[in-house]
Length: 525
Image (cartoon, rainbow, N blue to C red):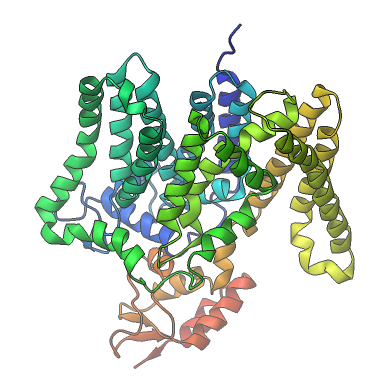
């Protein structure tokens, strides 16, 4: 009998991802730049600021960098959970965190569409997405990237269903609504995302089976919300509305925006190498396998998505680690069937002997790196490795999960191999839960001085203008101070110098606010 979609398992995996996403969600401050900026724009939308409804502002000025799709959702959460002061971090992050987890079941649905009837590959796709550190970590921040990945999955799912569905109008509507969602999030990213799907469709000549009138009608109706907002934006703000496309889109390819890393194309590769374990061991083999199966729908779509998105991300002149976020979905689609083969060991004509030999060695590698992690865990208990003591819990979870999982996956019993795959997944989930329950999950906050003590000082500034000296403007400081504190600026008013900020950093680290002491350091020019 034909296999049925394992929707109960996909639903259970989504529930697990949702629970994981809220662990420690509000325990750390918002960071520069994305989180604090998103929070402020959402708050001003909630307050009804701006020259027209639905048009975002930042400190009263038109906000031209992003469309307000996620900001409007966060502003709704602020209205649901009102507070007398600033909204707390949990309120700001909860909507993007939960929306980001929807990519877990959607990734499984994409795999099921590409490889119908393969329950194991479908489940493995969702499990891989659920356990990837970058997917789980960036998704829980008040940023657009996690939600964007979810909407991108819906877009590709709609494009795939245009070929196989008996209801082309509904598939077209789904595609159009997803495109509208991308237009209301990171609009320029719609171009490479749609192009990636278009390459796969043209490659496989899938468009020949489309019922074009019904499909185009559905797509057009679905596009209306996104196009309507951009039309309204252009009508009210004129040529400045083009900055959303020219500055945030083409400008990041052609120009150096003055932020991010100067490593260029190496930044996405480093992010992939750091955050893809243990599944990254499958990736080189998966690429070879997909190339050998390029005549299949799975091979065409996986290669098209990966190549087109990589070609649009790697050349960016402005590079930040989360710019590689869209690549994780193609990576999961590529690696999942290989993990399923390691568990099931089902011989088929599409599994070359060379691939089987390579895949049979991967569990041995997983067991080895798990053992190495356990050895490092033992070293961290000694004075020699005391610097790594904060990572003992995650290292223990990963070491036990990977070593046991690798050993079980090398056995001849399919039951034990399934237990091995479960061990790998649980090892990653345990490590993620431990990381998210401590402040270390938001490690960017340690890259510079904390803003909350100084934000408290600015409220005692006796109404005089304050500028920050020796640092770029800090959106997170602006957020917590509830006022915009520019860099340098006028020579009049109160200034926070490097030494004052360093002193307050020490005060914050020791949880001694000593506000009167810091207030004495505020010098009036």
